[in-house]
Image 1 (tube, rainbow, N blue to C red):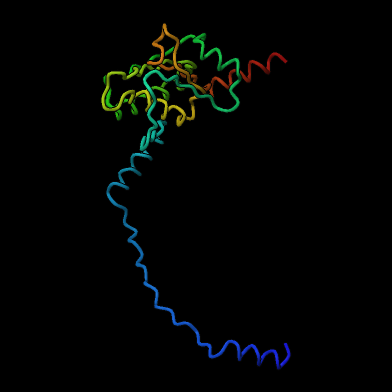
Image 2: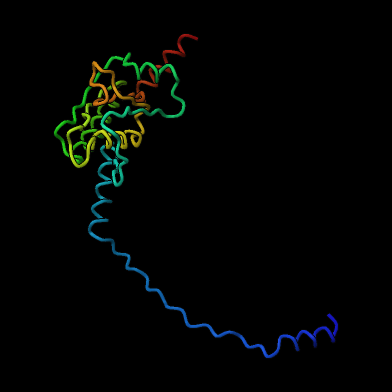
Length: 194
C-alpha cells in the first residue's frame, strides 16, 4: 500500500480502540472423588468381567408389539444357517423360561444362561419370554428387553422368533457361537483331513 492509500484507510476507519472484554468466569475443577454409586458400578463391572458375564444395558428399550417377529443376525452369518435357525431346524439343546421374572431378574438370568451355553458348547437355545399381550401399561415388556439385550451379547450370533410348536412369537431361537475349545477341535479335525 502506498502512503496515500494508508492515509485514506485511516481516515475512513476513524478513531479505533480495542474492544474491552469482560473477565471470564473461572471454572472450578470437580473433585477427583467418585460418588458412591459410581464406585459401586465400577466394582460390579469388575466382578462381572471376572466371572465372564456381560453387563446388559437397558436404559432405553424400544418397545415391540406382542405379535412382532424378532430377528437379528450378525454380519458373516451364512444365509442357510440363519434360514435353518428361523425354521427351527436345529436341535434345541437348552431352554430358558423368563415368565414371572422382573426385568432385572430376566436380565441377570439371560446373561448367565448365554454364558452357561457358551461354556457347555451349546449352539442353539430357546428363550421363552412370552408375548405380554395382557400386560398393561407396557405390553411385551420382557419381549422388548430380550430383543434389546441379545444383540449386546458377543456370543449371540443370531436369533429369530420361534416356530409355533416352540412358542411362536412368545419365544426366540438363539444361535450361540462356538466356544474356543470347540473351534480348536474343529480346526484340528479339518487339518487331519488334508
